[in-house]
Image 1: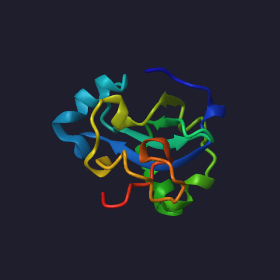
Image 2: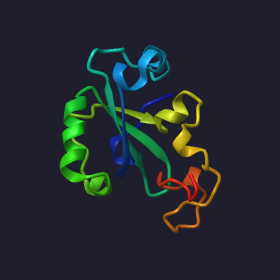
Image 3: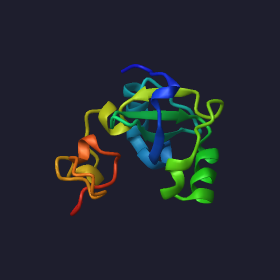
Image 4: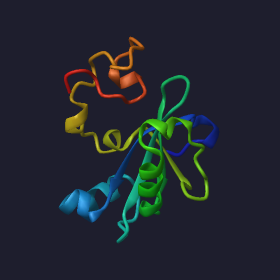
Length: 133
């Protein structure tokens, strides 16, 4: 797992949070796999895609900031946000579910056509959940 240049992160389309509260006993394991230190405050993630459909994740240790950002702007408006590097100093290839090699229950339909209407399969699209999932 590597990092990437900021210019490759075009737009965030989803977010997630990893804390002891959200992951329970799996938090420590997740942090090891994600190459992150298991902190008391946890980690926040903006799931991003570039124009070619490549996935990346902007990472912050300021979980309350991410929660406020999403609460104030809503998930749908994430695509218009410019990611502040001082708040999201870490970048990773792929999305967190790809880091651990586990498909989340929300993404079981990843080989179905994306519900955005692009005609792409879920795995290559921007992260909208496939119909019926």
